[in-house]
Amino acid sequence: MAAASRMPGMETFNPLRDAVPLGEIKRALVIKLRHHGDVLVSSPVFSVLKAHAPQVEIDALVYADTAEMVILHPAIAEVHTIDRKWKQLGALGQLKAELALYNTLKARGYDLIIHLTEHWRGAWLCRLLKPRWAVGPAVRGRSKRWKQSFTHIQTMHNPLRHMAESNLDSLRRIGIQPGPDERRLTLVPGPDAEAAVAAHLAGFGLHGKDFIHVHPASRWFFKCWPVERMAALVDRLRAAGHVVVLTAAPSQDEKNMLTAIQARLAKPAFSLSGQLSLKELAALTQASKLFIGVDSAPMHIAAAVGTPTVALFGPSGDKQWGPWGVPSRVVASTAHPCRPCGADGCGGGKVSDCLVTIAVDDVMAAAQELLGA
Image (spheres, rainbow, N blue to C red):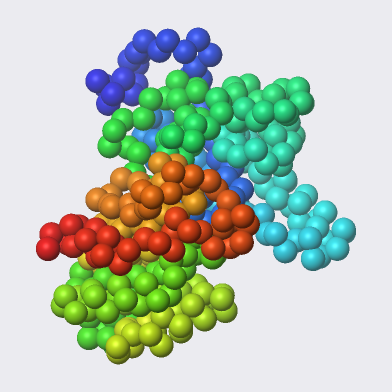
């Protein structure tokens, strides 16, 4: 029935009185100004909108450093970016960059804008670009000016609802009901990234689907498992006959963490610490048989490329942010009823008791379940 309802000339009952007539949309802009994982978790919005309105050209507006999360997405026509470094250009330089972006967006002539965060920039763009329809989230305490920037207001996020679904609620608000098979995350590594990773793996004597990818760190270190336990897990995995490839982001903190883990291993593991772009990281994860990590962008990348995932969660909420749409196991403490608290460590001390006390045995058991061992 869902497919038939999208056929030209056919109508279906929609109880939403202000549903947007999809056939009248030619061009749409989806705005997601957040971090890498947030942007990736919004990827089903593009897929679902394109599936229900295939004639629409859909653009994305994201921060420049997160653009690789949506570049090559098959439903996206153009990716527009905002560079956080514009502020370093001085007042005149920043103004020129902002005007250039505005003129580019204005020339695209959007009929629909979907703004997925509480960032004021999205509201102002809706006012300036004057689309026929605009969707924005309800934000408690915001003035009438915020609400009047949109034709449709999406209800507040539910902490028990996964963020992929919360993003898709923006489409439900205008009358689109996503089908169960349309809600997967999407990330396309691309042939260049796949070739680069194949070369790295060949150097290790690997061919793909013959190793476990472990990414221990997050940009937020209060979400990280202790290096001693991560090292013990890697040794356990290798003792069970598995090959492990370790990765870390190019940041010095993450590379230092990986160095500390390697120093505790009985024998150093294969490592691509700080050597991969985001697309290459996705290609590596796609080539692995299992991903193990914490609540981080690489965990969402694993879900987006379809790799079974073991995710360790502490103070952040796995119901909102857990692996989406793939076989997965979330390992979290059951002895800390205060989680998820969202705090940056207990008392703001950057160390989360609920995370550091997760047992190596529990993570190993989750991995073995997904590996079928």
